[in-house]
Image 1 (cartoon, helix red, strand yellow):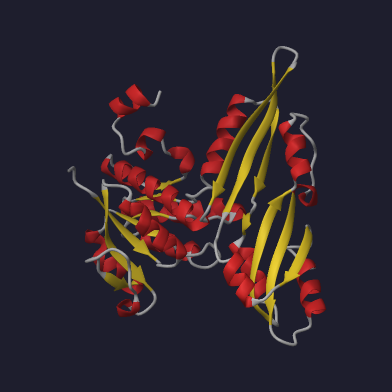
Image 2 (image 1 turned 90 degrees about the vertical axis):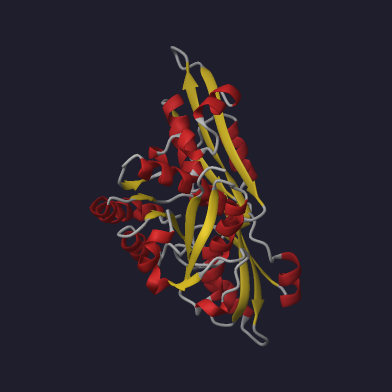
Length: 330
């Protein structure tokens, strides 16, 4: 077997575990280190014989890792972790706060260029796979319009926001595309759609015994940046029902571009890309691991600095060599 790419994981939550599983499916990679903010001896990982180190000691183990995959959150972890780790490692993250990507890119780019490392940020499905399809479709259909729909699926950020409300024990929030809006877009009519017209939100909430349910529901539907701009339905359920029916983390969505072609723009065209995922973190992890291969190859070529999915060629992602790709994939 060819020399394997040595992967490190920083953060062992749902995403970190997903990365570990994805590495198992890629024979050209192996897990060589896990870094955690928890007590290392308390962490039981799936791969036998792989050391678990304190996150604070990561830099001391840089020679054990070819690519470090950062599995923290976008709100507070990755904005500081990714630039810091780019001083010592080739790094990958799934930073998904769209509005802050340019700022995050600049911070990672500065450190990666100084250290001579490669950093690929915002790898996942949105940003990530959806981003690529928006670019491809807009290049092919310059006279057109983009639409992105998310769901039906669990939004972990929105679920967390509901759980922070006083009197809430547990909660799941589903983002649901509006069927009528989807059909309008698929028809090629290029409709103008508001936020409320594109998605609805549905919350399943376990409340404390004796909690004011009317107050909780009012706080949810009026919450700015999360629910106020959407039609939101709230269901109060038991913990047993939550565990039985809402324990998974499914998600998915659609990227659609409709556009015109022809001298007089007489032809309608619709490009659609969709995902239906049993597990959001497991799929996101699989995307990240493919981009880890690309980061390793870029580093071998002497490339440094921050990159995004737009800077990576399909051949750099694939485990197959270029000759195989030309023969079987074109």
